[in-house]
Image (cartoon, rainbow, N blue to C red):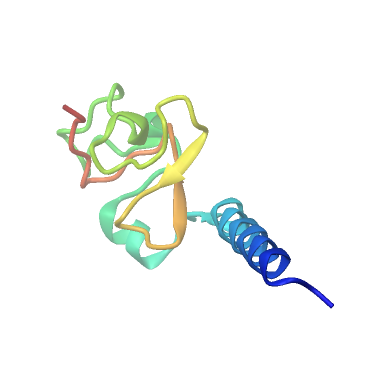
Length: 100
């Protein structure tokens, strides 16, 4: 029989494992995703069409955008515009807003 203390410890460990698994299980946004297409998202900022986005600068990337929720050194991170998915750190979209 499991003690009450063991039960709560196991419950905490399982919850932590599940929460951690969700972070790692997030898919990266595909450029043909409907939201990505509407925002002009590219996984590589150097491949943005200058004709469509004349204000784009190659120094602009998701990793230095105010919406990027990862660390600047992460390869990818969450973005509230793409719920449940990650954007590449070197990506770009028209919602880019330089981090303060």
